[in-house]
Amino acid sequence: MGRQARYTDEFKRQIVNLQATGRSIGELSREYGISKASISTWCKQNSTSGSFRSSDNISDAEKELKKLQKENKRLLMENDILKQAALIMGRKEK
Image (tube, rainbow, N blue to C red; front, top):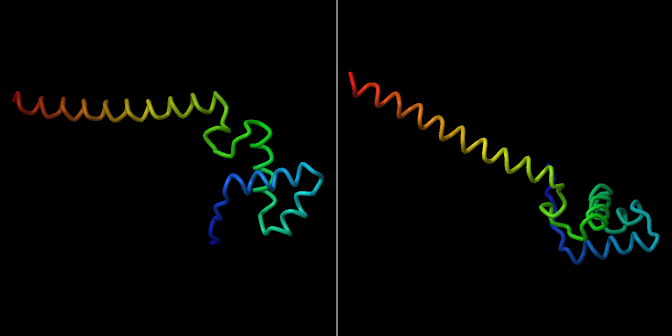
């Protein structure tokens, strides 16, 4: 399994600018040793939000889904705690 390289935003911006001046993604990939998928992703992120952070590049619907999933997980935990408390309280009354 390969290591995932970390690139600075400045480096990513330089690659995106090179691609915007007409250099092909394949050419940049070979020259800099970066996967085509990474370069393509950086170009897409730059064109949509101007940011390379993943949190800036998700839609409002995806943000809402993450929020609801987090809330659902919390509510399930609370429900479990209440069930356990009810079982304990039921035993004490006997």
